[in-house]
Each structure stands twice: as structure tokens, then as C-alpha cells.
Image 1: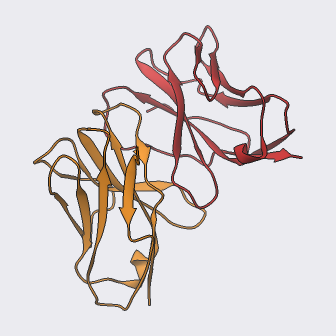
Image 2: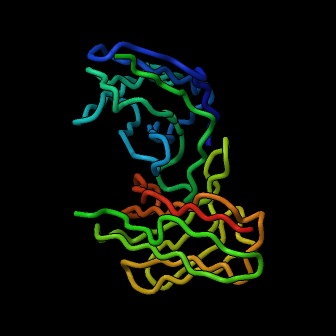
Amino acid sequence: DAKTTQPPSMDCAEGRAANLPCNHSTISGNEYVYWYRQIHSQGPQYIIHGLKNNETNEMASLIITEDRKSSTLILPHATLRDTAVYYCIVRVMDSSYKLIFGSGTRLLVRP
Amino acid sequence: NAGVTQTPKFQVLKTGQSMTLQCAQDMNHNSMYWYRQDPGMGLRLIYYSASEGTTDKGEVPNGYNVSRLNKREFSLRLESAAPSQTSVYFCASSLDRGQPQHFGDGTRLSIL
């Protein structure tokens, strides 16, 4: 699975969009980009995943650059409950079972 | 719809005691997993079950055993607990290999 790089921390104001970047310059053609988050003391929560097209669901949007070397997770209207550590994971869809969580980005949403 | 349910939520054991952590999912998923998370670290896979009737070792299986009781339930057993097994244990499930994994809220286990 390709290596990912994320900033260690970010903050944004409540109600504003939170844009979390992820670099995955060594991504292979068959690797997907997954995003999870972990709110303090809870289990990780799946957010969204994509291959090369932009994706949107009820939680967030995922923007993947055309060369697929980086992506951005967008929380359109961040709330205090979105304060969490966000993990970008790159893996082949039918690869090994384990998820490799890096150090992630700690997002703080300010009132 | 409960998702993934883990019991107990908290447990304190003495060194050498045994216990079983329970996990059940109601999403009709085929694959289930057990992870541990130590302070300041990412999750590490202990065991997984690709489908009912199969189990396989992950990256840190020593000291643990698992049972896939049926499609819904996947238990993790510590036969002789050691202080190094103090951790937060998460169970997860996914529809199939590679599909997004859905996690329970964890079992916080302390071994004295």
C-alpha cells in the first residue's frame, strides 16, 4: 500500500469548510483513497473512499487530483463534533485485510 | 441498527487471568477483525475472519485466540493475560475484503 503524508494538525472555525489534504505521490493505478476519522475514545469511523473521480456522501466530499498524487477531504460545514483525528489511507480494494493507520491529521474545530 | 457491538466496554484483569472479548455485528457482513490500539499509536491487526468458518493471524497474534462463532459474532480470547496486553481493543466488520470497515466503540482493557 502506498505511503501517505498528512499535516499533523489543523484547525477551522465552526460552520466553515474544513479542507484536509493528503499526499500519496506513489499511489498505484489500482489503489483507492480511503478516509477514516477517530473521535476521542471512540472507534474509527469510515467517511468516504474513491479511486479517481470526486466523491460525495452525506458526511464529506473527496477531491482527488487528476494525477491522483494527492487528495483533499472536505467537510463542508464543520461542527464541534467534527473535532477528531482524520486518517488518509491508500490501499488496493482487494488487498490484505488490515488497515494501516498513519499518524493522521488532528482537526480542531473552534467555536 | 446497532452496527458493531463490543462487550464489555471496560475490564480490569490480573496477570494470568483469562477473558473473552465479545463482538457482534448486525450488518450481515462477511469479514470481521480484531485490532488493538496502544496510546499514541495506530491500530494493529490481531486476527481477522474473512468469512464464517475461517480465521487468520494479523500482525500481532501472539497471546490471543479467536473464534468466529457464526456470521454475526467474532470473539477474542486472552488465555493468560499479561501487562503488555493492556490496550484498547476494537472489533470491526466489512461486507467483504477491501470494503470499508465499520468499528465498534472498543473495549478498554487494563492488566495489572
